[in-house]
Length: 109
Length: 113
Image 1 (tube, each protein chain N blue to C red):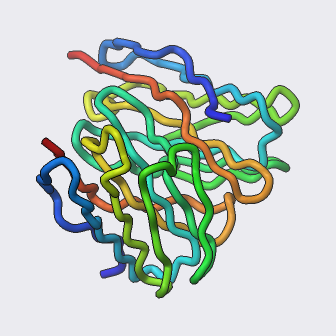
Image 2: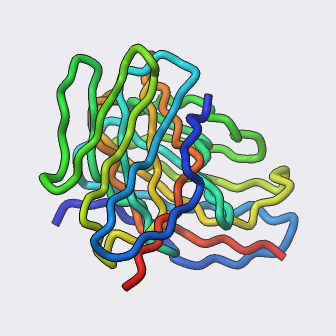
């Protein structure tokens, strides 16, 4: 049930772009994206809903391919503050919800 | 200020003791969740509740118990039956359904020796 994320880890220089992928074996109703800094709670970034609606921050973009049960998070012109672990969360029918395996992102000067 | 609180931040217990972790929210959210996170790992769902007096098991419910007597509160008890209880525990809440973001508490780091 747990979605799989790729890559597991990525290191970027400031200003570079990155894409994080999330793939599920189940039909999805929604996809959430969160970022967690070390020792802290996850913070909401974005929700993508079946049908195309999106809710989230202006500087974050993501896509949701309902047929392929996949989502991608796009981080452009990365900043040092983008460092952390990114989790996707997948909403299934019956209000079931599962977080992904996580992607560690490190931005260096 | 609306938010979700967990207490305590750090908790130490001896093996064989039950321990209860507190989670309170004043966001008027219907749904509440408990997750466990181990070092370098993702979040695994322990229990969730969509409404007062009702809750469902997640993937790793064995050795844990919950109650939802009030909308604002969703305490988690880690029982002595949980074989490896040392972990970071996160509580979250959201409006009903998967269309709404989850708000997380600051977490409780439990160490059992």
